[in-house]
Length: 344
Image: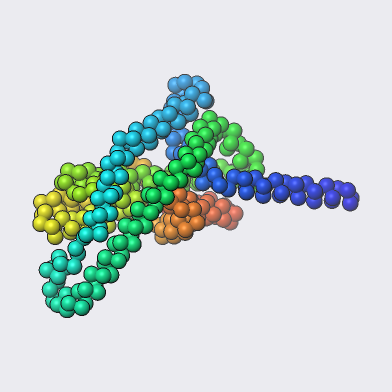
């Protein structure tokens, strides 16, 4: 009895120690591993199509790895000089930007005091300076950290390849570890698959589409620094509630103040098109899938950002969704609660 008890304690201690050491070893590249799995999930439908054609597990995964590398490297190689140049221009323009004079002309009754106007000008200039300095420091840190970034990218693509090639074995292994019945396992995997597709396609890809549409408007109507503004638009469009309006309208106002009324109207038109495109793209991607409540998406994104950084905008909502799914299944509910809209 004592020997059996000792063996159990020793086994638990050894397994626990190895798990802790494994976590400490993988912690520096944990986000890269997660990103690799997320990419594998996104590209799994394409992988399945290629697998039917090739009847090979490794070849479709390799094709997708090289395709994704090309989609990243080629645009970066082509547009990086332009983005760097526009970043410098954007920084210089922000330091010389005069917002007080247009505001005084538009609202003379509010800005009739020189002291008040000067204080507002200092506050606005300080805010813009801090924001632009933070962005420039962020880009500088990226350039200085290129060796580490290259290693992280390598881990992402290795994980992406093997997660695609061995996805069936990985899923079966995870299922073997779960303490659920076959019926509950099926509900769990179906719900997590739907909610993951909903977050990835419903937020990220739709935000990408909306940002690109708005970016086309920036280029078409000669908006200064269109690349930088397009990247900002893509990022903000991926956030729930915010959307393209928070980029397009300020740009249109800036153009209108500068006397470019035609360009301002054009940007507003593209902002409306980008906003309404959500009504067409969202049903195409996620209409029949379960969707996480918008409030939880926002909370998850904010909390995820503070914990995981940029990747937290995706991981935060997913973690909350998985927690709700597991707790609802634990309560023997067939469909998740009102916090998750059921699939149609």
